[in-house]
Length: 254
Image (cartoon, rainbow, N blue to C red; front, side, top):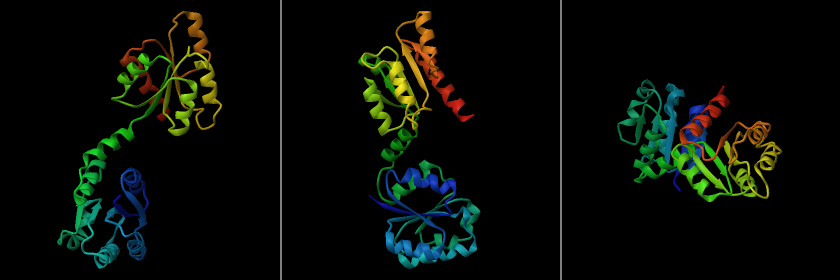
């Protein structure tokens, strides 16, 4: 796996860049001190240096000097305001340094992959998938599970579980943003599964939507007494359940 040294001041932008690049490359954060950059180049031996120059001033020219002294061949990609690039414009003439004014994910990943002579598309597709909200759908009916996955998979990352035990296992491996839970499952039903989820401190705030195959008032009232984030009678309509899910996520952001 290729190694990238990310130089910056550890702002949210730099940390975010490190977060999504670290899924596909070996990354190392480094503060914007020429002395520390020099040490990290020797210790880490990166294949590429990525620098957030929004926080740079004229004194940071020494960092460019340190990189050139280490190797004139190692590719350097900078990102940030164009006016900051102009302070160091002479370092771009050789072609070793390249600049991206708008450091969106796609632009950065494509620029990095170009330097490494590799396709960016598999990484970009993986980043998009990772960014999707994670939903676990729990039901003992495999046909309903397949239908739910088909309804949701374009918008969300969907994991299927056929029992409470599978649900709890997935929770421990990959915490979801929401659980869609069958109320009438055999052995351990939806009520008991909800109680198991709420008994865990790490998962007690995960919203749960119930699916029920029985629509009479007494049954629905029993479901609502558990205070789920929502409920639907099977089979749910795609537009209605997605709207409900999105409303739940919007409320979490308030």
